[in-house]
Image 1 (cartoon, protein in one colour):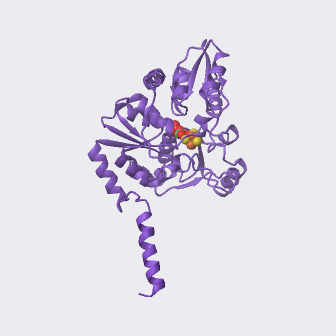
Image 2 (image 1 turned 120 degrees about the horizontal axis):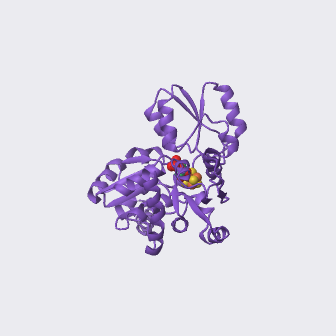
Image 3 (image 1 turned 60 degrees about the vertical axis):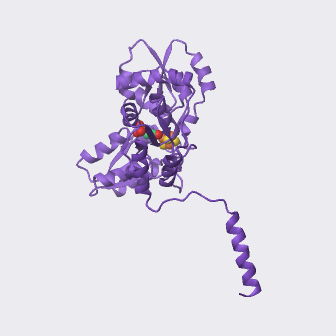
Amino acid sequence: MGTINYFCFKLLIVFTATIPSSPTIPQDLFKAIADLKKELNGVILAHYYQEADIQDIADYIGDSLGLSQQAASTEADVILFAGVHFMAETAKILNPNKLVLLPDINAGCSLADSCPADKFSEFKAQYPDHIVISYINCSAEIKALSDIICTSSNAVKIVQQIPENQSIIFAPDKNLGRYVIEQTGRKMILWDGSCIVHETFSEKKIVQLKVQHPQAEILAHPECETHILRHADYIGSTTALLKYALKSPSSEFIIATESGIIHQMEKDAPEKLFIPAPPEGNCACNECPHMRLNTLEKVYLALKNRTPQIIIPESTRIKALKPIEKMLAMS
Ligand code: 13P
Ligand code: SF4
């Protein structure tokens, strides 16, 4: 070996020896995750906005209501929640003695973040005779300040059950709030929050798409703004949109919600065409940047290392549990 080659060889040994050892990621992540799940008596609950691979390894895929119902009834010891923080938090509120894992602890939610607990307390204090109905997309602290929780699939039904003479604050999503007001005819005080993903859609581009696909039905989530919802043939939660698309005789759909749902739509109805509603900019803004922080690799690592786990102070959990239980009873 020449002097230079020998020097390079020695350098390589020193360099390799100083690299911190990273955890080995198995080649077959699907099998490794299935094995770990069995070992832990774990269950994987996933939202439709997760990447396709995560949806494919999940034991249950659903909307926020379905996922809460699954979390409330599961017999597993470990819940891996493939979704965002408020969803895993809800599972933990319902299951204080179970280990609840979130693959990426930074998977938050712009809508939940738009409603900080201190500001919301001040807001609530201005309306002492109002009850608070909060969309599940909020922190445990906001849930603890609420009377009833709702999701996009039961918000209308829950508001309809409130006596006419009872005034209501609805938080944190103003778009869902406006939609519920329109559907129920109830006046409600709205918190000024919204979701970055559902406010990204371009009305102009959707109308242009509809010209190119005149037979397509437009399906929209109620977190979208009014000027998008007014073009929709059907409005509903992610599960409701999926069920509608499968049942409808139409063969083309424009989907105005996070594009992850299209994976299930294409799996369940491969003969139909699902077109994601385009965002304003030239970006993938119809993918939730928080939801997409989770990856298959992080699912594996979370199960293997039993971390990151959700921890909630018991006093907050007890207060947050009541409005969630009310929602489950009223759904
Ligand atoms: P659903 O799960 O109720 O359809 O709501 C979608 C959502 O934004 C979840 O973050
Ligand atoms: Fe939050 Fe919107 Fe992402 Fe849902 S899609 S998790 S509401 S930011």
